[in-house]
Length: 163
Image (cartoon, helix red, strand yellow):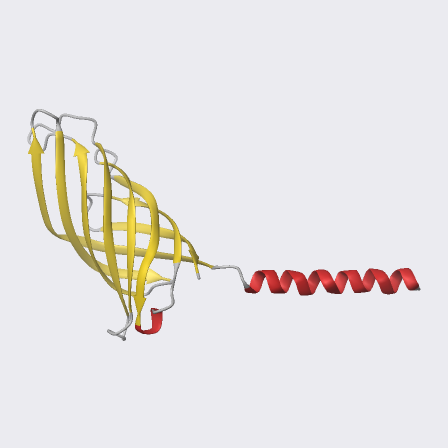
């Protein structure tokens, strides 16, 4: 009987410890953005074969951060925009501002950066929350993203943890 009581106590401690540990874990989250490019500017450097670009986009976000978004992105790609010569591979980075649906005072700014493949029309990389305000003022988090690039409309899925 003592062994059963001891086993029961150990079991209860494990349950309590698991609950306490999970209470401090970040919340898993996923959100996506689907939008269109609103402006695009580039500068090709013929001697290097590199094109530097900056874009802006707008659209809707869904999932953990439901609302509307805008982003500003910049980067470079090994591609001649006139002849399409080059590897098509490059890097991108940017800032996304998401405004919560039906609450214009609640916003979050997310930094992202990674790699792009213009020919495969894919992007992938990492992200983290820079700043929240309103109902998202204490939001933090980080994760990975992957999606389409250069396709209208484009969709990028962000996965990770929020705290």
